[in-house]
Length: 193
Length: 191
Image 1 (cartoon, rainbow over the protein chains, first blue to last red):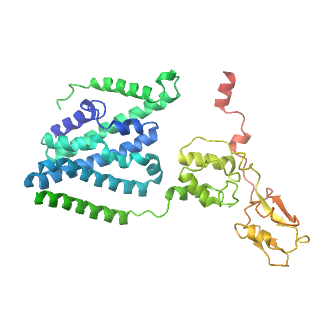
Image 2: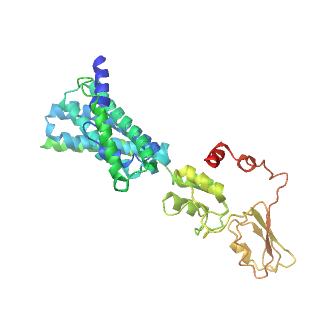
């Protein structure tokens, strides 16, 4: 149990996928202009990440490993992720058309969110069990959501701040992201993970 | 080699079937966003927004092709509701589309009407009753006050009569109109 808790803390804070491993930066920069959108994106990604971590674990253990098809891992995982994303898209479209419109292209782009594939591949690399994989995926997703919402909150304030002209727009956003990454370095060594 | 091909094909087939099932299960009909926008529009079908009616305008807004400030009958409150729904900034009414007017109904002066049926063809909601060479009249409950019957009338026998406040249409004055300046206004006034 404490093992699982350690995985959660490690993935959310210490090895945060966005700010420490620098995976999944595309939606991090793209959809973080408004808090509401960022929250929606965070929720959608949480769902996809957790589900695809579990599915790809099953595919790896029951299909690829017994048949000795380790070299097909990447393409098989991409297939899994694409299917999960497609499923999420349909559900979001049905349950919240407004969110569907706001997320726009970024929703199908979760497929190419490298954090999602990264989690699936790291699970195999670190030989996690099913529960560990699930928590690893969920932790990564929570970390993504946390950073995403924090960053959107900061950006909403920066948007009304008096930023010098050369730093406006993407420049100040990247600087903010860099400062947040520095802050997250402070968690290093909190949990071995 | 064969196993590899079969595995990937099998995986793809399974996911395809699952997604196919979900697509049927979670089917969405029409455009839910356009539906929500349309429910906020006043349904006068007046065409002042330069679209053929409220539905086409709602679809254009949903597709991002039209601004939200082109509906004079909806007025400022309508634009605010749209801005709220779509999470956009409020923009004042586009003067090109027209100006906000109190709601009115068309009334045909029956002595002057020559029974030409031109206004019947112009009415988007079929609120005008009559036939050739017989006088026409307007069903007041159906009339949306869109003004579209005015231009075709050859004898100018149609008047737009504003709906006055009677016991049916009277409402309490809105808080914003009757209240003295709120705390925010007073603060900015002091500063």
